[in-house]
Length: 84
Image (cartoon, rainbow, N blue to C red; front, side, top):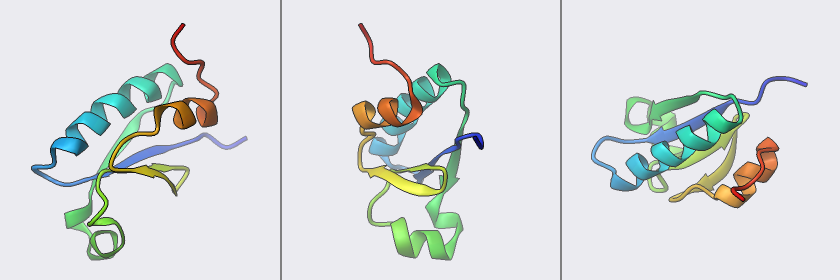
């Protein structure tokens, strides 16, 4: 099975992006995955597609959630048990 990759599409000055990065880093760490932060404003195509919805979580290149991290769904999709 290929390694799952987490990306977070962000932009400077976005408070929700900071919160999402902290959450995603924590859950990714529990799954043994790093998180790649991608600035949507650095890429015209990404800005056009996702710029009005940041932060956006991508799992294996597919949109998983936006505005907030869907923690329950992400844990399930990564096979990470929830807190007891």
